[in-house]
Length: 372
Image (cartoon, rainbow, N blue to C red; front, top):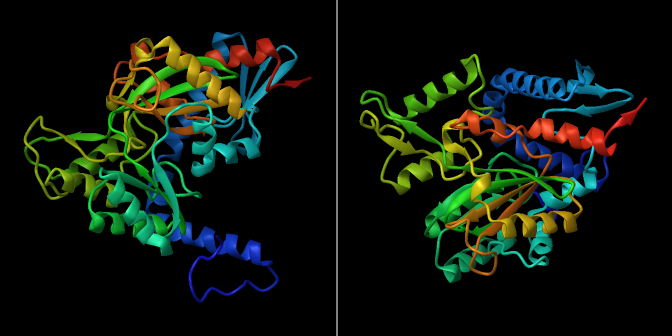
């Protein structure tokens, strides 16, 4: 579907398809403007983190490291060099990355490999009744997400119960994209399993973001203090801001709270259901907890999808349970997944050297490199 609202007019000199894309881009920017500004404040922190990550990994394998134009980092060993930007590698094509970014299509392909995916429905914002019917028939909480064009949890609402909450979530997601998806909210914890060319690298559990009361400050003030900490710390503690948005207000409301509440000293308050803005205090290495059968099955799925560097997000009440219709569910496959999730942990001593492992693989196999 390409309709982005009544009364839209074609841009002179631009074809209908490009005009629709231009309108949709504007649709994304308007509601996301405050978040964009807050994320930009953390841009130096993200740049410093990934520069140090790759510089140290290069030194560990006897390679040189050099900053290049366009945000690229050159890592050279002998007559081979690879280039990275953040967590992006020289491996997966834009088409492959788009494939896993299309939620409905990726669910279809994941399910074809025999793995559980959330029950879901793709719909247009003008078809809200179909989403209401899906929610009523499911009989449990759901998640609403823009179908495309966003990332990092933007436009996502979790823990939706009841028609009024669903309609609010649809309006929110519809500000980012007219097409959206409503999914079963699979209960349990959020796990990220990362793979490179079929090789399992590491796994972490990411819990929802929290703030801790001091007996004086409101939740809003505690969130602001956390964001100052994230921006100003000598060592990075998180690479994304903790945004005050509809998702935060909705999650607090589920517990009968609001941003004006003052938590008691030492009281831990969950402020979001989504984990995209969690920090190190909520991130744990769990590689030893993942059954070998799960690692192998998820690895086969990633290989079947043709994604070389992937972070697979799994929801599970019991990660040791076997995969199947009632077991852990794959909720997303991410191309070029963020490496900070594996480095910024509650216990830094448990961090796996994922960046070093990646470089060793690239240079030893001669893949994803430039030869000079």
